[in-house]
Length: 115
Length: 110
Figure 1 (cartoon, each protein chain N blue to C red):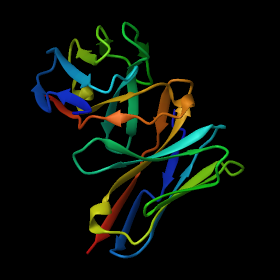
Figure 2 (cartoon, rainbow over the protein chains, first blue to last red; figure 1 turned 60 degrees about the vertical axis):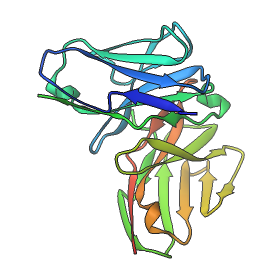
Figure 3 (tube, rainbow over the protein chains, first blue to last red; figure 1 turned 180 degrees about the vertical axis):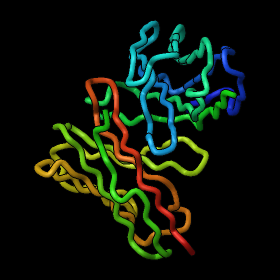
């Protein structure tokens, strides 16, 4: 049981390049989330999904797009990378929404540097 | 918008001592969660306390919740070097999402 797996673990991009971060979970969770973590800022929600085929914006969605074509996968895309997107990106999943008291399960992150 | 705020930002103790971290939040909640993050790793869920609970235990962890003061505390008893990590509180924001605080960095020295 791998839990939440993020690929790649590290990546360096040049400004303007594009890339996709992949998150996969094997727990049959309905809800999936993408966060970024920056020093002194805590975790900030980028986008999330409450089920296959659905996506919604979080606190800091600009510059990112997401897709949830399969229940187990949640993709985060950067169409034109900017230095401000240098961060550590975390994916998480949960069985259902949090007002039903479900914890989130996190991957180990993707460390992304934009030069 | 930041809902939970941890205090202190950093805490340094010796092995065997107790560590207490606090979390304050702004709006009414139906549960509050605590997570741990080891260096270079993702967050790991520690404990969830519901709004109708005042105290909850899990091993060496004790969590309290005071809804009248909109605050929670996490106590780690008999700390070990392996407890060195950042600790975050998280509160529901809307139906489907959590808002995390900025965390308390705990250093436990041998």
